[in-house]
Image (cartoon, rainbow, N blue to C red; front, top):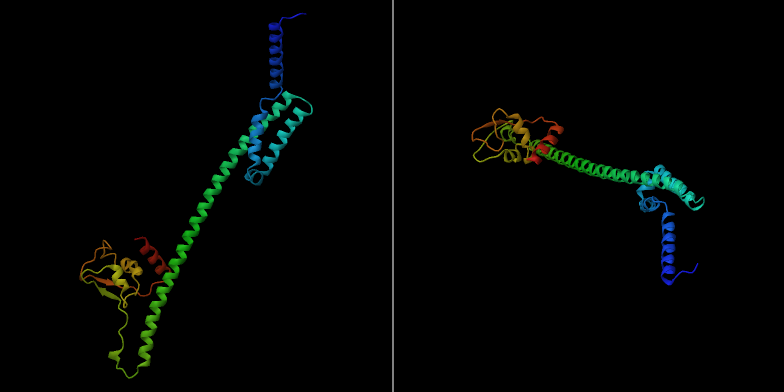
Length: 232
């Protein structure tokens, strides 16, 4: 057959188009999508470490598709496995995101728990130190009395008071900080709780009020008082 120049050119264009269409059709439609996600998961350390079985199953599915595509040249059969691999990869990516969110939340919770524990230990140390100071003051007073037998009984330091009369302008922390009371301003909640019938507002005291001063409070009560004081 004798074709003209225009006919030969049109025939070449049609032939080239047919070849391009054949080449593009030979690549399974899900392969590039699946390969992209598989490659992305391969660069994530979380995939093989957090979900080793799921990650291995994904690779096996994708490799099965590769074998059908390259060895047996079964495009349709390969595309089924590529699509399945894509779906597995999407699920695995979602699981990794959820796992990372959970790990971040657990990390924040551990940090908060450690901070609360540190604060508790600090309050307990402070309460213990306050108790030691108070006991030391009592022992020093007793030792001074023992070392001075010549003094008459009336010269012996008076015992620590069990009541206190409020003066003008005084606050509970100021009263608690007095050396004959607790020598520690943070223990004022102990006085407040023992005199709730007189104190409506711990920030407002009235001159002449007579407060009971507890003496035999426990170590845990001192810790709780310091915790309450630090929050006010």
